[in-house]
Image (cartoon, rainbow, N blue to C red; front, side):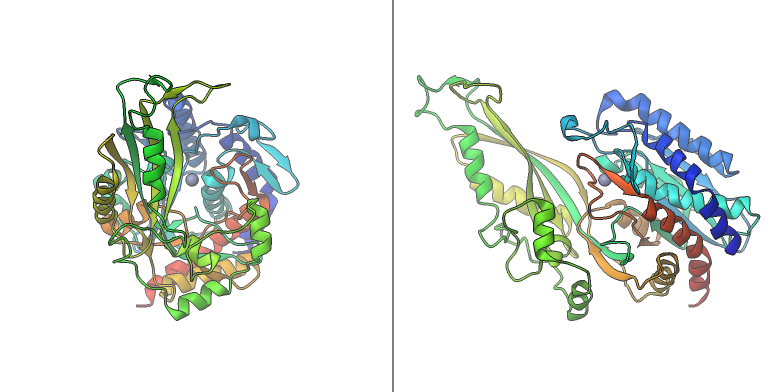
Length: 458
Ligand SMILES: [Zn+2]
């Protein structure tokens, strides 16, 4: 292990340069014009894997391809899968970036670029750890398969089918995913639960065209007004979602969990300041940490209607639309929740407009026991790599594919994220800490003997 760790230390400058190369690809999966960039980015990763001597290939899907890479196989060893994604969120709005999103900029120990933290830097850390094993002639204690997809940011549309098609090759003892966060460098974390998600887009149609508000206004309903009134009824003033049946399957937080979550470093005033809000808001009876990770929510992600240009335009708009997402917690099921949402919205919609409802991507919430042998093994690896006691936490975000790993491969997922809270994932000025990058590589190196050992004990 010493050889592996010193190899990692020695090669940090090159690893950073390679991460810079990787984040230069504008691999925005949501925007069709970036299709060639997606392909080029997958190709770069393929070559990086092959350069290490991995058996790697680009697997086409009906959407963006998956890059699959395997370490040399040896019979009788445990097999773990490392999952990541090379696609990134759209960088807009560009004007809020201090430097162009796809031109990496180093400032102190931070690397600024779209995708640096979510997720290129995080899965590259694992790949670099494998490089250290292979280049120092240190035998890996297990077989590893990297699965790096290109559609995580658009709901992993084709990964479930990919897993099913390649089930035999991907069957493994556990999946390791670094796509979550830690509170700070002194609190490395194993994330044992994720929230699920369900997305809907609601459109209210009014008149057949935008109307002169002076001539017609007052005699027809305004779809934008109707939409605002409808949306305002989805949540009460105490932060509770006002959809009948919505909380029926929510598993209550145990006393043990509340105690673990209370161990996390948190200062309300600093949090408020960091977010730039005059006051926090959340469901009554829960701490902010619980509200953002262990309780369900509804959010309006976007609102569109009428005239948005300069000056005024006196119209009754023809339509109004909103994009909504609901974050779900164990044991809420997206399908059941969608049905409740549909029924409730239909009951709220006035007869003066016509409602159109589109359901978007969805993912189930996830929970793995923090006391399992695998979880304990990963806590030991974290402790050695970061040099301090790790914490247990829940993540408010969603990685829908994690439930597919369980369903299709029968494998639990260990969420060993490397992002810091101020990494600005999905926001302008995304960055990745080079300290997290380096410690992530060490964690990955320490992880494989630990996990292989944990699998042997029943
Ligand atoms: Zn993301």
